[in-house]
Image (cartoon, rainbow, N blue to C red; front, top):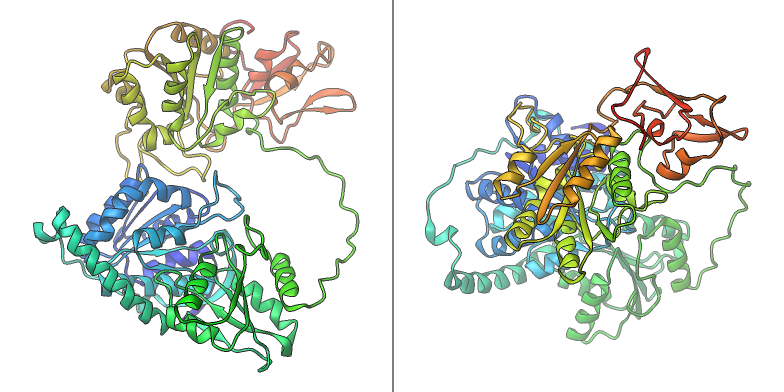
Length: 617
């Protein structure tokens, strides 16, 4: 054993390696992404198969196939990704696995970087699969190893459900030396159709076995050391607190400040199957219990049920009773206030802080030089005066909704914009329907929507914003980049060929930074009937060197500020009443030059003036 200082996701990834994981698949999504990246980084010999799958469903099925073969498999995603993977998971719960299989789902209370708040503990109960809920970085490292053991022992996939503050928190922790890692040997797939082919008769029998197994696991988890009851420092105290995850250390810190008056605490590390007997032990002799959890009242409902089943006269308080806020993440301060109200303690004294320094409040915007800005602007100019709708998607380009671009009218979930545009077009005569999708999302979840549009004769324009990376989550590879997470150089999957292969007749590719040509292509393609596609191809500015540097010719500048009003690039600023270029942000993309009506912007590219093709827009 030795000490390391790791982020939670690093600890989980290294814990999986220590457990002898053989196959790791997943789809990038904050806050889960670094788990798979950590394993890839510490896999120099390629002994572990690591892949960014095209989406979470594919990752789930790859991991399932490996687990059928006796391998230890891990699949990673965030909470909204679990929705995509739900179809195979629900059936997999009935079939079970041979090798250990952990489904890591990183929940995002807040939400901090997600469309929705979702609580995977509900999904565990829905799928009838065991769920492990770590409360610290150290526990996350150890718990994923225990999760593999439980999975193999009970022949079932299991959930590991860390939340953002565990995933992205840092801690010094005790970890295994490489010589202590499990060396898991893979038997290989053994044909057994009666085991691996799902039929109604098999499912009926499996359902009965699952219910029996989960009842047994409830008793087993009651003896699991990570489900623990901390006795009250005051033997006369008849109040208790039930909590889990990152809320547990918040509660402990709060109670340490009170010392002898601290109530009894129940730490729930396996929300499903719920450790019922441990809960009874906790509830005995109490009058009231406060439940502090993220996100939903899972523990609160379970304790209410236990009280009814065992006729325990304990009042259970929490979200359902209005004692705790019903949305968003818990914080150290919110937990202190909740506990203080429950215990009748004085509220925390608010310290006076020095005045905050003046700063610019800026909403999230596309980066300076981002090619998506030029793509949106080209479509905006091309469709000016026409009745149009612009359906967006999940990724950096969602920020196209911000002013002054104002080019995202809808955004639901990954890949949805393609079908939403078809639905709008079906009931809105004369509407020019556009759907914007990134290159990674195109492969992940947009292709079926394109097939649907071709088959059902949709009249719409698909716009693929191809910046050659999965930019939103940290520049991971995808099928169109030509390399894999294992470091292999492979043939790129062509977006153009994919579109033509499913029946799209018109597919045009253009550089969005060539604004006049981009506008002309949009006008031509949008005028055609049926489903047609434009691919705006220009690399993300984070993966290429800057093209050059723009500058304002002050003798020509009329201070009309059109360059600011039209494109909203954060690299164009006002200083001392003059329009100037922020040298720390400019990449020399040249879009501002195309916009300026007075030729007052010059772009120097590698010592020479950059002269975009075509005239002014």
